[in-house]
Length: 92
Image (cartoon, rainbow, N blue to C red):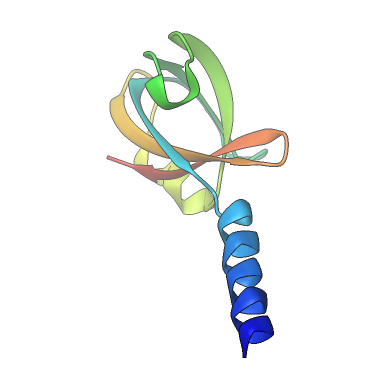
């Protein structure tokens, strides 16, 4: 019985280690590249990553998000780290 509890605890910790932390920021759309599925955003600081404001390209989890944005538009967005890339998951 004790070994089952240990296995369950190990599984929970393993799942938590792979969970993606999401980050929120505000910014202005600099450019949209529908072909490559990327959006460049001049964003403010991201405290959860200790980032200063900068202009950077993000991938998008769902290319339909690109239909909601255009250069010059101010947005609030959520993104996650996926491998070596950062992917926008939500735009408001």
